[in-house]
Length: 312
Image (cartoon, rainbow, N blue to C red; front, side, top):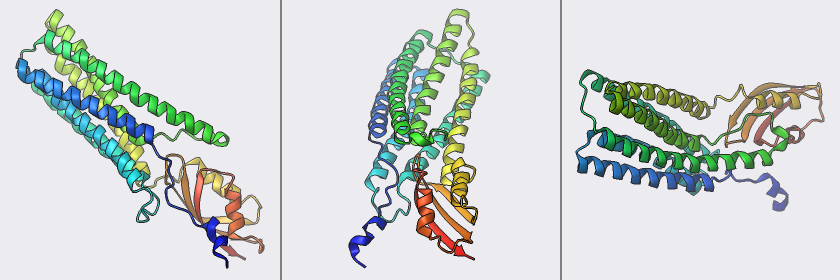
């Protein structure tokens, strides 16, 4: 057989498209967050403010998690064509998203512990100073959320044009980008709660409002973390057999009425693409595995298939 005849059967394992905009946006947000963290920690030491120091170290956890997201993009891109990764490097990004969810849970736990401690043993708060830095932190987080939101919107927009025939599926969000976005949104949300609490304490002497808002913020952060953890764990554990594409594969293979799928495995290898391995039994003695693969070709999201066909 001429080697040129084999060219159509040889392909690489870089199943997912690159995420250059998401990588650039995440890296930019990481540096903005790290800069704000340094400003708060320096201001805390300079003004002898424990609240500023605490918020600065709290922001450091977000800077670390967002940095992890940026590193995941770079690592996935670097090893995209490494043959040791059987189904590409996309799950490096998902692993980073899962780790970010764990960071968020840690942040929520720290917020609860600190808030309970302040409920039990209230501390003096420099309200005006803390509010000024809180507003600055909120502005920074809103800017970061806008940057990541634009990258997220661009990804979804491009995805919509790439697969017009399959818009009935849910959007395949970039979970690594989503993890970074949740971190900045969570920080912005807690900044709003902190500002509300500081205003209440400053104007009405409600010192208890600050730790109470801390607990409320911790609960919301924990809920976001849980959602992100479920989404990323689902991909990492290949729990995709309830996806609509699974039924579509069965329907298109069994469309001739003579073929039946007896075993099917489907898993995601990119944000919007899948791989499948199936075994089928057919009464059609002329049917070949390549013809089954051609049937599957109407679903653009199936980019890799292994087919075992038994004729009866």
